Image (cartoon, rainbow, N blue to C red; front, side):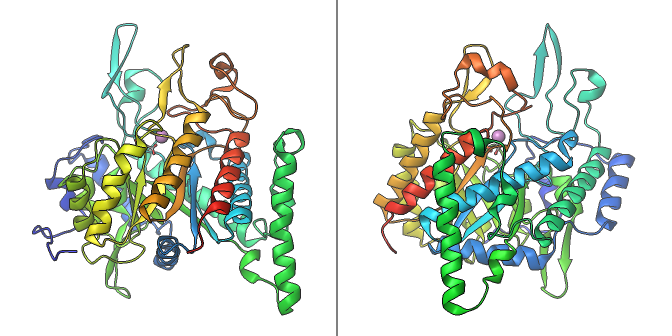
Length: 454
Ligand code: PEP
Ligand code: CO
């Protein structure tokens, strides 16, 4: 890696002198300044100890000795900050992780798109309905989804509401995990309805048994309990889109002599805001969290090279994750040149596949959907391309829910376009329902079984 460093001095607000895309400009309004001051006073949502622990886990995944499972809603909503929705999201990620562990026989690091996934990039600034044009809905942290001029007006107070919902969500997740809910010895805690009705149930139970047997075997052999299995780690992530919010919770920690964005463990930069020199790249180059960047079909090797240098000039392990999302039809041609460039640079990155965002389409009835077969296909291609290039696909990034929604077609129940309206709830992108999500986890386990030992 070269020594080239951006010349501009970094500060938590240096992004303001760059090109800012996808977020409202509150200007210097009295209200937005007051909200940012309030957020800066409130305690951080996560700690640097947790952030550093995740960075180490990501470094292990880079090295091929762990696997990252990142998943959750496309957009969290304030209304979904309730016990049932949070428990269900946790359960599906825990179940999926057991299925993956049983196949790949490596630790799985669970990262939720949760406790802060409230800001959305949009392809159009305005939405037109019946000849009326209003600003697009950009997530609950920015404006409201209802189609009125008042609701669509960006409101800085919503940053405080998002902070509070994130804190409530995190508090509940931490209590569940500390209390033993996530103990791998008791996977029955995570049973969802589907297990009793699904064609995949037998396979899932077999996988759970494999993991339980492995734990028992180790414990009887050593006479010790695997404490780590009693308290699995769970981390949070969201798209670091709404920079005023991220900035307000960014602190310089004297004991580490570094800046941290303490709204989340793992922020990522979306595909629409990662242009070289953009405000989002400027902001995230200065914080010490591990960061992800989405890599879409328009990414070029030169552009990616510039991101490697801006975001990880010292080539630190665990710092940078590249989340590729090309679509099933294009991954085989678009991914290899990027991998080759990264190899040539000697850059340390974690490769993660997002098989969702390159496969979005409009169904015959006008609803946004994704075909399950395309999602599986992109995932299979991702494993194959990395194997051929000699790199390790160290994780997946999914939009999913533990509920029985009908947003993506296909899967074990063969959902068609005609089924979509039955239970379509997402306000933004279509998510895998719990059964489709488990099927993806089982496929990952199969790919893991085939992987060459490293
Ligand atoms: C997302 O993850 O919801 C998203 C908008 O992704 P991308 O930036 O890859 O389009
Ligand atoms: Co999405």
